[in-house]
Length: 289
Image 1 (cartoon, one colour):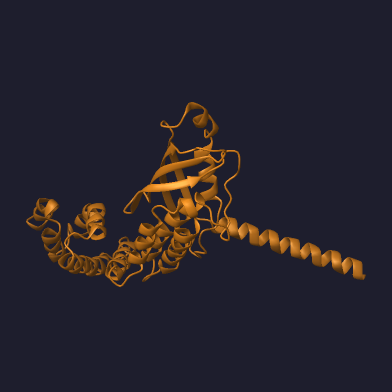
Image 2 (image 1 turned 180 degrees about the vertical axis):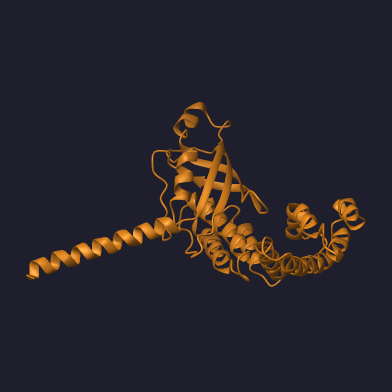
């Protein structure tokens, strides 16, 4: 084979490898976001400029490989964005509110968003650039990923909480006139990584491991979910107003009732009666049957 042919063959092989890696990256993307916007407070002309805003944000989120999860875990996100106009110069500025959730058991709300956004430019992901608009999206996406990956392995979300913390640290000091709220976001990321929050994260791992066995082994399911309930009991005993534990119970109490409905040992439901008095009658009805 001539040197020229060898070079051509090598180049083709490199192109095939790059294409394969690109396809793998696309297939690894497992976030599906739905974005809704409320632009009613904006001037009509600005509403018109932003008519494709939700679509652009969805594209930004859904086409970026946020994680390297080998199990292709699907994460569904809902973003609700409310924008108000703050433009006073040639730069388009906004203040906004964001509500982001996984449509299941995790939700974050933020009313202190201040950002610049040029409606004529595409939204581009760049980890090396500070951006008052995309930093906010990246921060909360990584928080949700932290919550989700804590469900699949012990403290598995640490990597994503750390990414969120790094974004908050950089934004707090590097976004100039758009730093409002980043001190609180940094506090949030630090809390989610703290020893204080660690028992909740461990509880989540036990709970979802048990849930993953529900179609295979009811005894093991109940065993691991009982451990999770005991951890919830301990968390609430130390902090009766712990919002994460309370919100978790609110999202999952019906699920837990169904798991122990036919169990011989209903002690976990008795524990829930104590830590979740709001639904005590529901637990009591199952226990007394």
